[in-house]
Image (tube, rainbow, N blue to C red; front, side):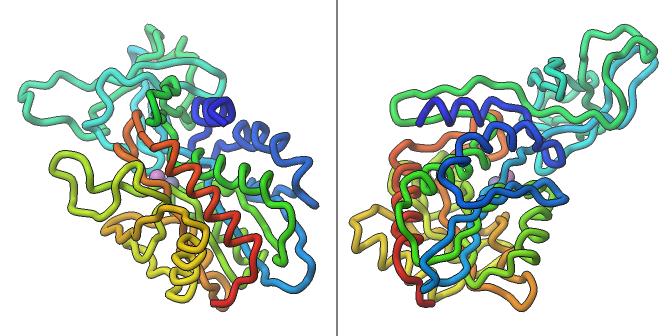
Amino acid sequence: MNDLIKKLVEAYGPSGFEDHIRDLIHPEIESFADEISVDAMGNLIARKKGDGSGLKVMVAAHMDEIGVMVTHITEEGFCRFTNIGGVYAHTLLGSRVQFGDGRVGIIYSDRITDRSKVHGLDKHYIDVGATSRKECPVQVGDAAGFKREFVSSGKMLIAKSMDDRIGCVVAIEALKRLKKTPHDIYIVFSVQEEVGTRGAQAAANHIDPDVGIALDVTTTGDIPEAIPMAVSLGKGAAIKVKDAGMIAHHGLVQLMKKRAEAAKIPYQLEVLTGGSTDARSIQIANAGAAAGCISIPCRYVHSQSESVHADDVENAIKLLVELLAKPITV
Ligand code: CO
Ligand code: ZN
């Protein structure tokens, strides 16, 4: 599975530019889905048909990652940029970014006179090695993602885009392992989550599911001076109860707990004080759906070293398979 993880987490795919990720996922799911489609926004949708006795279930994992977009280029050939999603200035100095054509740039900022402060994004730039605006190979509107190698260190898996390629891996693996299901399942590899769960919103309006399950990362409370939170790396898949954008469907939360306990899958309960996921969009689409989220605990979310635990990934896959293989009553 680490080969698949490496392939997906190292690839380029900022929000709105997910084509390449979609091309990587498509062959992975081809022989396991009954139908595959791509909608107008670019969501990749794999349908697995059930025996007709179950519900319509939408599973969502987002393909996009945070990144940057060039806003203007200085006379000297340096690219000023804006954020795509939650990119924070204190994570940036010396970073390498990669554009869609593979070109690499370095992020740095204007001179810092007070080292206790970081500049805002507007005082950062990307150096692509150009010496003038005229000969700059990058254009206004070009998007870049971070460039970092995948590292597997013991059970810790580290990458620039665990959020949410690891969710995509969980969805792919669950689809591969799911032999029979009562449900009509739509696995959506969604676009533009990091800019406001936009892809999942369009997909949920179209699919109109009874039940929605997002797969995404969540932060942990187990690092120095973290916001207190009862989620730790390596202690199990996290069942979301609440985040800043949604309260998970109570019945679905109870079912997830029940299934995890019955199958002896370690789990943790997640109350996240910030952030949200595609589950929010599914929950409030059309007349609403019973929505929840299986989260993969992750340290350093939205940095270039997002870190998850291999056991948590495995347990998230197992829990999803348990849910999809059996009847759902919520
Ligand atoms: Co994110
Ligand atoms: Zn995410």
